[in-house]
Length: 386
Ligand SMILES: Cc1ncc(COP(=O)(O)O)c(C=O)c1O
Image (cartoon, rainbow, N blue to C red; front, side, top):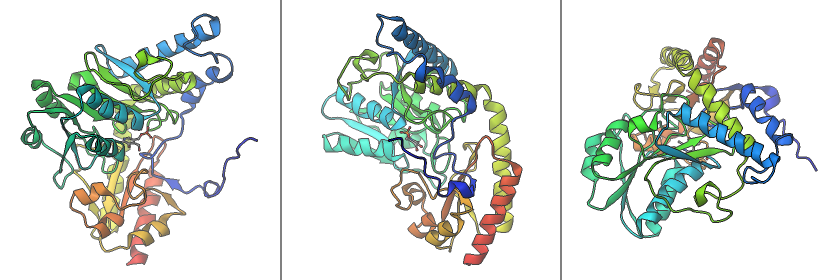
């Protein structure tokens, strides 16, 4: 039986400002994937016949496109099911190759897809230090330097925060690690395609990527691995991708990922400028119309499409309930399991204020009218709940 698409909610088409949770597939992406479902449906590992060879050639082409989008010359890409798996491969894979103990450093405001594998490593005997950012969400090279221990072998700091959109000073942090021979990993699921990201120029050894944040398909991502970095696999099987991530490669998803990346990178400056202008207008409007509204995280450096606000004194549950039918946004990460944001609490917001917060993330198609409507909606709801 064919699964049917649920139509509830979508038929009323509320305004969507939740593009950091995910994005729709761009038409160009759907087009790039199309031939690989029914026409060139071979297994890229079947090199004995034309069907397999054409799939394999497509995957090679996609790799080249992605290498170009990321300006990679001394790194390779391992395809994964998304950034969650890429983070797991980077952290668990690097640690298990290192040995059975040692010290890792990360940040308390990372996504659960980094924090949870780190917790697993603690259970396995590794030590983990989580740095606490300042009220602006940023950490500094001095903080990292102070936390280093003689046996620190891996540091993981996300490029752009999924909730508050701030950009961490990757280059300075990575340089510190490079001097000491420590591997540096960055979860760039939110950054890639939304800000310039050249892992090698930034000095990154391991970088996690996801396609569905940049108008690509869900279920595909990659780990960028700088030449010389050694990882142990998490899965064992048919030996694909040099045994590091076995399993039949999903050709259509890979083609979609490469197309989405090329599209995002080719239009990066324009799309950043357009979205940040709209985002700034949103913030200005909210400041005028919602007394006491606070921005979470530093205003800059920040992703162009993110605004995270707290409306102190409002009941978070009622705020979200009142907005639900008209505005799609979130109170934090899509993967936060309904708990008040650990990111906002790490920045010093109370639990109640963290609940009375909205992550508003703009998309490529967000218009000025959408922004005006959002300001109107949020200010009306805030007024009525007060
Ligand atoms: C920063 C960050 N890391 C990891 C993930 C997980 O990515 P994926 O859905 O590709 O597994 C997300 C998605 O919400 C994210 O925002």
